[in-house]
Length: 255
Ligand SMILES: Nc1nc2c(ncn2[C@@H]2O[C@H](COP(=O)(O)OP(=O)(O)OP(=O)(O)O)[C@@H](O)[C@H]2O)c(=O)[nH]1
Ligand SMILES: [Mg+2]
Image (cartoon, rainbow, N blue to C red; front, top):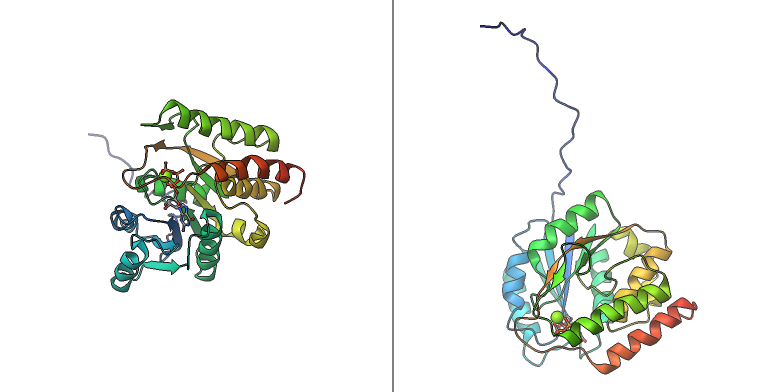
């Protein structure tokens, strides 16, 4: 038998990750007629103790806002911002960001209510925002990412839209229209939110353009993006046209 010297080896100088004592990540979910999925989604987000949920509802005729308001009365980590009518995705996010900043969030995530954005990715977005990047995008178009159940036309519009925006704005980002993201607080404090003009899909492009112009580091992690489970799309021709025009307005510094 070998007699090992009795020395105690000091543990490596690794400080465990600093976990905040209160939930410091606000997940902003804009809704318009999403009563079929919203409560299920909120329950899954609340599995992560760091997260709280803010639903920004535009007086959905299907009662989504009321449903969440009832839930919020029983659950302190859920809040709802009720807006009087359908005012658009971009302003819903901006109102949600202001609320999150005012409620001391260190990280602010955004995601859709229709389960195209799987809450199981939230810890990956959050870890990457904690450790590496100022903005983390859940990306369909990096290695390991994908869309499922999409027809050719939808794929063409999405990929074409990304290529269009990225070429004109010289963005080295694979999925600048993705609405599944995590921002560090500092990014939303630095960007002039009152100056953001886009309200539909262009909103995501404008935010990432402004974040990059302000010098923040942007990373992408792969996500699989299935089609919405239930309910109807809010995509409209007007939203696509706004995106096509606003990319040029951003390029020439007009917004
Ligand atoms: N508050 C608010 N939420 C909105 C508005 N328009 C869309 N949303 C929400 O924004 C998220 C994304 O909208 P979607 O309709 O899913 O857009 P999409 O993913 O391109 O379209 P789908 O093919 O239907 O999935 C969903 O949670 C919607 O309920 C709006 O004007 N106001
Ligand atoms: Mg969707």
